[in-house]
Image 1 (cartoon, rainbow, N blue to C red):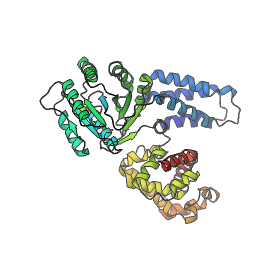
Image 2 (cartoon, rainbow, N blue to C red):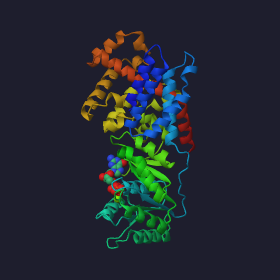
Image 3 (cartoon, rainbow, N blue to C red):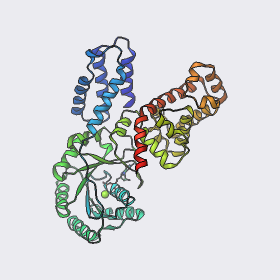
Image 4 (cartoon, protein in one colour):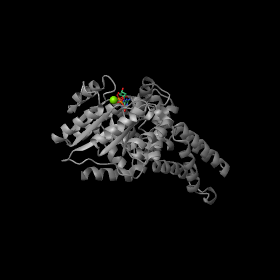
Length: 439
Ligand code: GDP
Ligand code: MG
């Protein structure tokens, strides 16, 4: 998607006589890309009107950087759509907070329940799980296994078939035991089944949750809107968790769900593992959707892995990004794997490696690292301009690394792009570091 949108914008800015007709056709191209990425069709139409209003073509002075302006308008509008400006419920320690999960079968409720319990447990909450899925054979076993792995107390029954009774009993028991966070997992069936919705309201009435969370599978695409509306009508959830964002889905469905229900996304599932849960960040989400790369996410991830980030973070805060910083990032990506997952976090790299499998991708990365390793220290610690001033340096590096001049150029383009992002992030990163220092 990002590629298509960027291509549309680039085409437009390449042509010397920018006219309104071209602007319209570009907007159409962007809209098609968004619909293909599962953003609701009506939303896209609204977005289009709103961008047209923001970027008033006739009134723009000729010197305006139109590409930047258009990109920013698309970005801002999407962020606005995905950010409902509604505060999600925040559990407080020292009192029992009951959270109930709803969602279709297979959406990832049971998995996300455990992830969320562990997330709060790691932050000092006394968390536990109640299995109110008596519909599916093996549901309690699955929850039991997950909970045991995460060392989280759980409640369920193999004999009681009424989920309302199990839910009530479990919540009562854990309230008496003074748990801070009691998460109730429910059964999901198929959307058409009326019993699911009836059962859901009965459980909701029985345990009166402080928060109901709807779990939405990122891969359901355009169905996201209808599905979230159907749940909202019956269970009135106050937060959304989007699962399987690590998959191939473009993620536009999430935008549709938020817009249709005015409900915030609180977390996203990024894999099958217990730790694959991230706080939802509208800006990072839209950047990724547009192929701009989740730089903040990458930096955070690198930080948590304690890899050799050396001066990269410091550099980004200062708005500097050297070729050596790129080399460090590339080698970190190699270490972190799986490639397909990590590459998407580096602006431009995901698009470049889009059609490669992990083996081809890692070969490509290795070649890029060889190129860096054939540079002199002066070149490595430079901002890359040195190669533009003396192109013979590129030939020498290509020769030394056993690659081609074209590949060296490609690496320098990648570097330039990341340096640009680093510059833009300068302010944001400084804030992030200040916030971390204050914690
Ligand atoms: P439920 O029926 O709603 O309780 O769904 P489950 O929690 O049983 O999950 C259904 C399947 O989706 C399982 O195979 C999970 O491992 C998988 N799953 C859940 N969340 C994620 C996620 O964020 N990423 C990936 N890749 N798989 C997930
Ligand atoms: Mg389940």
